Length: 395
Ligand code: NAD
Ligand code: MG
Image (cartoon, rainbow, N blue to C red):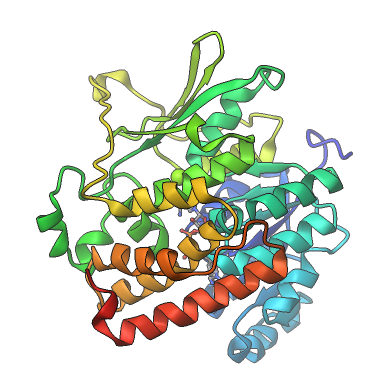
């Protein structure tokens, strides 16, 4: 094992051009000597990928969009940075010998195969890409155990629980409480929600994030995905996961132990904190980022989520309880629904109708392997796209 105090940890950042990816590079820039970037990958943002490679001088980059390969290759050739293209190239590149930790910050189902490839190559994972655990939590956590690979959560709630668990691994968890900001529509009625526009949904009160997770946060699907993510990360039963709306996003989540004692982790809502913790674990590195000030937060509030107004949360919790391929159906239908909402093809609440319709009609597979999950994912997407063409699924 490398000594992280004296040697820079060599990182692969998958999805380096996104919200988490760029903040991870901010962290690297802020912590000279602690991290070295070995691999950067992006979907299609060639310009930013080239700019990042010029600054961080990785060994290699991968652009998933093959149409942008030549321009990235030509721009980086003089620097001696290796340039590859396509999704399979990401799976191969994460296995490179000189990578110590893989940050999975791609969005959606596309993160699954590269994450599995990294685990198979024995690389520890800093996991932001929650959809991977939602779709294939059983498979991913089993493979990680078999390979002796650690998964460090980056999602702020899961990082909070992980931080609360330090020194407690032999103490059983009674329950965890995931906090939710409630998003931009906290307190809204179903009727108000039916008229929500794309622009309104893209404005989150506390966090600045990629478009997909911003919509998921507004619909509370994000909290449902996080419940499933937590179940797998911490080996919990569905009934051990509780959700509470905490509008200020200061308490990032809590753990309750069997003696009734609770531990919470607090801090300003800034994703750089959980990213840094996952990258530097087990160390805490010094930062000069803004500190929490009690005077600015005279009250922290808590309320139950409104399950009637936000059916996505109910659908996700149901899929968690059903298990099998149900969370994979939920995720695929949600990815199609979010995309359709962002394209202004369906309304805000129609996202839930589309997902509920798919969950009701999909074939249930109790213990899916990777092949079955891939089939579920593509069948669900295809059926959801078909449904979008006809209004039959609308409630
Ligand atoms: P984003 O959309 O800002 O960035 C996604 C990144 O993945 C980009 O670099 C993009 O180029 C790349 N990408 C997208 N599709 C791809 C594909 N098919 N193949 C290869 N690369 C692809 O997303 P984000 O907000 O940074 O979120 C990334 C992940 O982290 C998501 O799973 C999200 O749920 C999770 N997460 C994000 C935040 C946040 O604050 N943004 C917080 C917690 C968890
Ligand atoms: Mg989160």
